[in-house]
Length: 359
Ligand code: ZN
Ligand code: ZN
Image 1 (cartoon, rainbow, N blue to C red):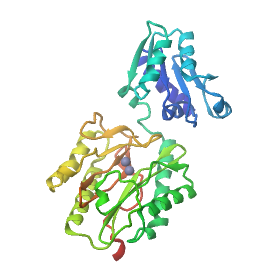
Image 2: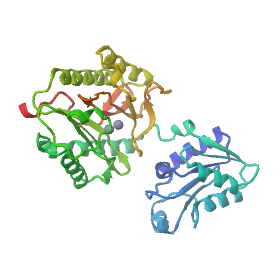
Image 3: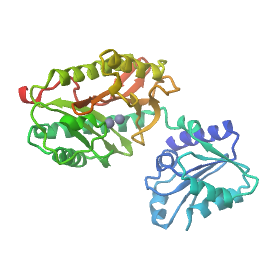
Image 4: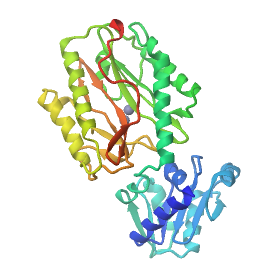
């Protein structure tokens, strides 16, 4: 059932783009369209057929998982795809913009000389954009695992603990509680390291009067969680306190406006303006958020370059941050689902100022 609906979306796209075939190599797209959970395969959507291709390592697995008209085994992926395209005599083929250039070039060289190839990026964003209730359930459960894992390790987040110990404990807790995998390398950035938006946990000891930013997530049934908390280790300087307050306000202001119809650029603007008017405009360099689903970063982006409006069923993050070199940083991130009349915050860890030693 679920796959016939998704297949319809892909064939509608095929018709809209006036293509004879769509070639997918991204594991997330393949999983979405036919259920394959392995990491190496290809899927070709023709108007009347869905052809799944993989190598002998995955034949047994694909027979158990894949919903397609044909499951084919290849020795070389390029040859497998090219022979399908040739035998279907296609003249217009679309492929993902993420396909490596060399691979795409070789594929074109092996196809019909007069075949037209279309490099698709924005056109494919719509495919996984609106989450169904099953997908929302997985995303919410992954977010619940974040909260449960965090509750288990919060006692460790203290001055004197290594950042890497906190990261490892979180990862371990997530896995033990049922996650398939961490969503990305856990970020634990304390003190001045907090100025690095992607400061993966180091051997640094967490210090007193520092802020600690922890950004982590997991994967459950293929779907991801993504959440960031920033905690204070005792009293912090007035500057750090005001950085924290500004980020939390920016987060709350943007979150309050999430509803169908609002431009995603507007959400970004609301948070960015607040940070700017508080004097920290130079220290918020990244976009406000990104979509979350089978990939931890997917459409839609929430940034000054966004082109979409929020629509019910979209799931994305709201994650403003301020990073002051030599001083420290704060990021606060929640993952939200746009609902018919607003939004539902999927991530559960409280984001208010939390001063660990004075609790
Ligand atoms: Zn994150
Ligand atoms: Zn994120």
